[in-house]
Image 1 (cartoon, protein in one colour):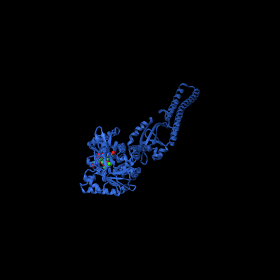
Image 2 (cartoon, rainbow, N blue to C red):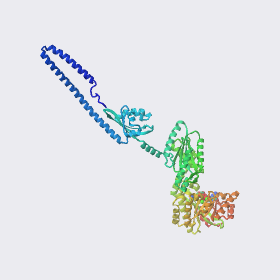
Image 3 (tube, rainbow, N blue to C red):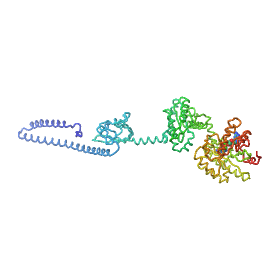
Length: 638
Ligand code: C2E
Ligand code: CA
Ligand code: CA
């Protein structure tokens, strides 16, 4: 950068100085000669004065030149000092800029890049040459052109902003820009420190993704679903449109998870998510709520039929076996559906109604779908009140046991009793177990209720013996949930110990599905009971899908033929055949067989002929209170 006469005032250019000098010189010579000739006549004096005039002129111009150059010299010195300072500044910027990972651009106020550091050269992919001759906006996205103008305006005062820049290869990357005004060569420049924040943005995106998605399946989570539902609701409201929320809950997933292990359970969930997802439209949202629960949003539907179609397709694709590590797993699901605007107008209501409908789909026998309707809500509310009252009933000890005698068909003697629970509700009167046991099962309340039943039955049994009645077997119903409890064996043995009940007189009634549920684990549990001397009976036999092979290996004592088969005796041939077959099977397996629900003499004599061991039913007695039972013990033998 060469020296220009910029330190001088505009009017004092070298040409002007020369002209000025020539003009003054000429004027001086002409004027002084004339004046001198006019006033001095003596030739000698004239010559001397002429010389003095020359000397004077030289002295005056020397003085003039001295002041002129002195002034310029000072300006130059000052200018050079500033230049040196600028150079040092720029050098300092450069040194700093080369050392940093940040991209640094030196920009003229008009937006022209004048220098860049090594990091910038590398990141943008241009050579330093290319970069230093480029207008800034070439590094920015076309849509940011206007913001570049704003940026150039504000940068000299200092500015920080986030934007996106483009490299030579056309790839855009997010940047954080911090700019400040400075001077270079005495001219204002902008020093722009740019940080490539791709990694930070990715990390932020990852965090947002994680906050909105389920880690196992990668599906949106509840939070994300709610956001989508909110948006879809706004759109539907504006367009007077319809939308559907579907609540999916896999059937018996817990059973599979428990028997096959959590690892396989996880894989199953992934496969299910995949399959369901493949059968939705692009705009639909499938989310996992957690466990085996999923939500689907169908925005913008025209009619209910569309939802029926989607539901049926989902049920159908899930009936195909899922292969996991060589195992074929069959998975079904229950679907509850709520519709906007019919069933609710806000997010919470729609999800709640779909959940309620799902619950009733399960009740209807699983593997089906159910639309929400207001009757379901009433039923659901009833369930809630029952649950609340049941909790109170437990605390207030509102449960009582009734006992139904089990009679030996050969001797006609009472050989055992089945303890059947009743709820004596202050508000509702006597509530039969069928009205509250399923709710107690679901809510887990069956565990403390069942424990109470077992203890009360044992206490009664011991009391009867103390009163002098002959030892009688006591059968107690055990629900699936109770049987699954890890400390169940401990609870039972604790109660036996606490009440002084003879283990051989206790019989636990479980259903086929409970016995089969956990395979080896269940058999193991049953064996532990056997070791304690407790008897095991299979309740409602014939209604489940027991594999006979399995049954053979199970440590059980009794089969209770389900009432439905006994009811069919004499009404049709088939019933009799089934009962005969079960009795034969029990005999083969050396199991005791009890017929339940015997109401008629025909049934009684048929069973007796078939050598059924025992019977239980209204023909002899319904379930009665302990006092009534005592009267039966004392009554005549049939
Ligand atoms: P379950 O174990 O099959 O009990 C037999 C049911 O059949 C009893 O109904 C009994 O009163 C009824 N029954 C007995 N003889 C006859 C008959 O000749 N004809 C007809 N139609 N019915 C007869 P209940 O007491 O209402 O019990 C219903 C179910 O509730 C029981 O079926 C059992 O599954 C459950 N349950 C009862 N008490 C308990 C309990 O303490 N714990 C658990 N977990 N479940 C229980
Ligand atoms: Ca029973
Ligand atoms: Ca039964």
